[in-house]
Length: 348
Ligand SMILES: [Zn+2]
Figure (cartoon, helix red, strand yellow):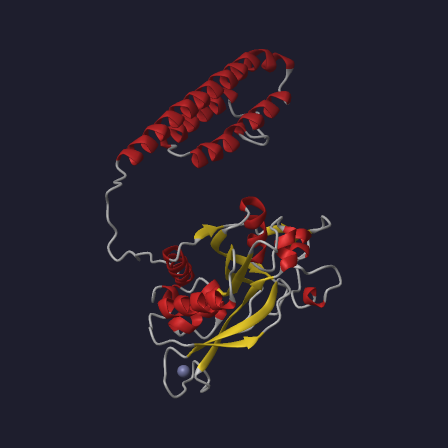
């Protein structure tokens, strides 16, 4: 409240001097905002002066009213001028900062990137099959029930569906693919026979995670459909693949019966341990490592892809990419491969 004894003129003068001093020292938007609240805010100095005028006599109001209005007009103008100038200054500073930015500057000790071990293994697999005349094929991770199950000879209520706990979408019939075999169907439906293709990609299963399981992992899948294809062709191809992949010419393979609905007959292929002659920790002293599943493409799958099983036949094979990487590079936990541990990743 203004003391009646105090000359209101003096108050106006004080206001002006104080405002001028403070405006001069403002150099940032934050400071300017603080000043605005102090002088022009709802309970600021200007409001205080205006309120004081209400207490004056009618006569005094006539004298000081116009002076106060003038003060309001001028001080707000000064404030706005400062605001505009400050904006320009800050913009100039920003431009100057950008000009001083040196895009060629080198920060010593920077980490250099390297290829992820899974990418490395995927490229190795692709290179080997490209050298055997295969093409690279790709397919969607979001799939329909038809491509993931029915076309692969896994009808509804087939027990094989239970072993692949599926991530279903709210939209009926849509799921995250549980196997890369779906790509076979897309390829054969689109291009027919003969065809030879290798594909790699992520697959998803609702599984608890542990050292050798994760809910998302990568598979490779190859297939070759032509005329008069035999189990001999499949085994020769697998042996070549594993010898090239482990870079050991003396790798032998061994075959066990295996069940996969989309092949008939189905087999599981083991490779002789690339790391020992008499048993080691990798092969758990057995000298053999379980590596992949394979077989001759089931006639139902060919029919589903509009290929006549009387004229054409073929083989298919597939397995986990993480498993190949873990064996080749001696990694003992699959979760390392999907994590972001730099110390682990920079070893490769
Ligand atoms: Zn071994």
